[in-house]
Amino acid sequence: MFELIKQQIAADYFLQNFPNDGQRFVAWYLRNILFRDMNQTRDDITDGPDDKQIDAIIVDDDQSLVRIVQGKFVQASTVDAEPLREVLSSWVQIKNLARLQNVASQKLARKLPELAAALEDDYEISFELLTTGNLTKAAQHDLQAFQEELAKLSENEAFDASIHVIDSDELKRRYDYALEADNPSINYKLALAGVQYMYHEVAGTPVLIAALPLKECVKLPGIKDGTLFQKNVRQSLGTSNAVNKGIRGTILGDKRSDFFFFHNGVTALCNKMSLDGNTLSMHGLSIVNGCQSLNTILSCSETVKSVDDAFILFRFYEIPQRDRADRISIYTNSQSAVKARDLRSNDKRVLAIKKAYELRYPSGYFITKRGETAPADKNKKQIIELSSFAKTLVAWQTLRPNLSYGETKIFDKYFETLFRNKDYPPENVFALNEWMKEVQATWIPENPLSLNETLLAMKAYAPYHHLYAVAMCFAISSNQPDRVPNASKSLEAAQQNNMVGEIVKVAGLCLNMALETAANEPQVGNRVFSPQNWVKSKACLAGINGAVRQYFKMTLPMLPDTKKRMDEATVLPVEAFEYRLSAD
Image (tube, rainbow, N blue to C red; front, top):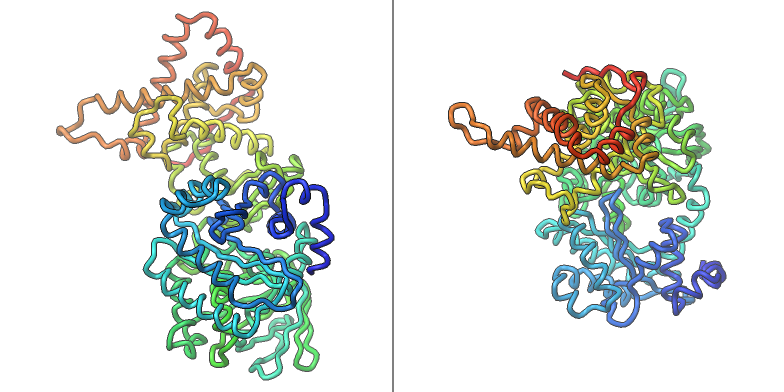
């Protein structure tokens, strides 16, 4: 790997943007393994004088993950524990960000506000040591101790952290899988010598049940980068939730030998598998139940590598049929920790919308699973996330933004209504996302629309009312107050007249007016007005409609030039409207 990387970092991009091979090595990893683009990579690199042993900081909002990277580009075959201590020192540094910002280099200091925001949102921290060598035995013992110490500290600290060494072998494995990232297919041979297992056929399906040592789990390819979990209903949620902390506590505690009995087991599907002696050969391997467990086990890799008394139940099934695999993925994840949104991620109606959207927008991507990330070559402006799409769909197609906040109800009670039309036009999917992005662009600390502070405090709910107000601008202006404007046609009309921003502004001001009007109305029984209750009730819809109607029927006529431009942008033909979906 050293020679391969040495050759690749001789490219102009690395030579022109990074002053030494150490930085170029880290940049190579960011570009080739994490799929950061050129600008992101330059921004992520913090290496240099006063870098405080932090060579790069990568904030991954999709996975709620922060990577703190330290690179050691060495030709030597082994690496001692000193680089590990440098990585651990960065843990101490970021625990006091105010001090760190005062003593850090300019490159590092400018990344710290982004890091601070991520920590406030409970992002997981992954400390990663990149090296082209392999750890010495002593360094491996130190890594085990560091992993255990971080696990203990994370129980009492404000954020969760883990430490990983990405050595020459792991770099090669990740590089090989990165080359196949567009269509990853994992083939793996599992050595079963010394393992208790049973091979049988059930309903004509080859099945192998094994009590697999935990130390064999960390050898499975595709855990950290998620390629092993393609058919799972969700990706890794980090190690900070209660269940994963419990798993880690068992591994590191004195009940490790009971791990087999505490755990429900892992379900793995293969397109084809065969048993030759004590070797199980698997083609198209994917884990459909056990993603969280395997990621947690990996976070304790050095401990599990050294123990022989910890086992986990594995079920390997040969399931080449896609629909059957999907049902297994759903049914094996039907415990309380899995949300309704997860169970719908492989629903045929969701997948139909995803396929249609990605065919219509080849550079776009429709994310269906929690924890999933879009490929690096996709246009970020055309990336759609299922949960966000469903919430905008409720606000626009049912005209009930007061229901948009309830993800569980959306994917349970209202799912059949919302997604009964698997042929929902991809142009509308794109348009809803565009409108919502325009709305969200006004919900920033600068508060460009001067929205009421109470509204800003309800950022999880109120932006969907803002989107609803956008729809009502078209409906009321076109004298179709009880019908839904076509999302793509409304966006097209607004764009053609260069009025997208103006319509979003008017909608926001109408929402603001509706709230303030409601707050000034006398309350029944002299009760105190609750903005949170108002925004979740149907009463707010009448207030928003009234504010929009007042603007278009009373305010606009006094502004002839503005009225002409607004009418051209918002008055749509009757055929551009449809009846709303009923969600209540």
